[in-house]
View (spheres, rainbow, N blue to C red):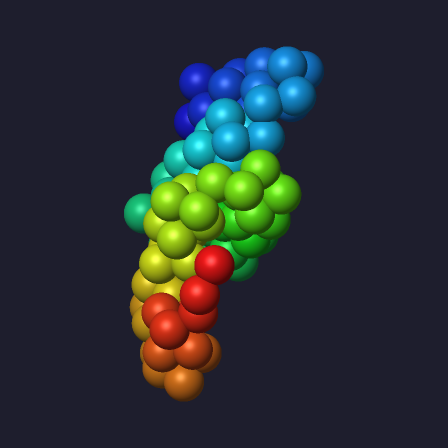
Length: 88
């Protein structure tokens, strides 16, 4: 987690939106594995927005999948399906 926060900080200083998105994705994934759904979603959503801004479609697609998995874990199946079908 410490390295991911450091990567986020460095990417932000460098103006590397894709790098920052990947760092935030890692933080979100750690929170996901800990069962902290809200924090995971917040970091994943911010990472997704940065990926879209950077026009990094592969990263954005990965994050849409992560957010779909979060909805699924919370048994919000309609939102999970919507998220999995979403297009970049």
